[in-house]
Image (cartoon, rainbow, N blue to C red; front, top):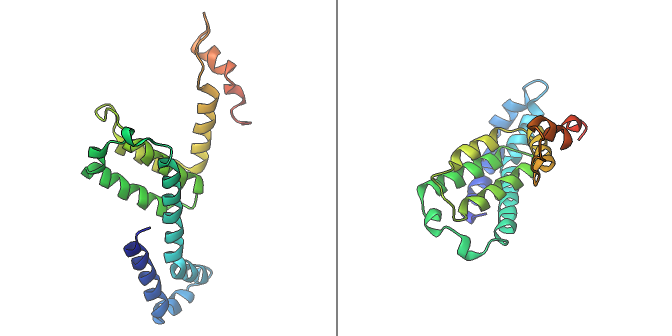
Length: 172
């Protein structure tokens, strides 16, 4: 994580902790005041952990990509800058580590040379952000069931889906 971002997060957390009136007022809120106080006081370290998680995952993902496959022009574009910011923001808003890992995989795919006229990466990212962990797990299971499979001769799509385990999807 950049030193500047880390410092900003720490300063915001310290400012909250040093303001004695605000934490005292929050602690007066029945039932949830204490939890809110802890969340606000530790927000900096929480955000820092999530960004570090994203960066570690991204480092791992990018270590598997050959340099000649990187679209260096795209890396300099405003579109890529926007996507990076959206991924970082989304990572800050989820506690699901698997989703943070998916964001890193998404960024890896985004920087690989491809025909960007056929896909809108921002649309894909928006869809990924909106999916819940359960929905992602269902999508992954369906993908695993159906990948690398073709219709057999005289087989309907419905027959193919049943053969691939569609009936058993709820159990999986």
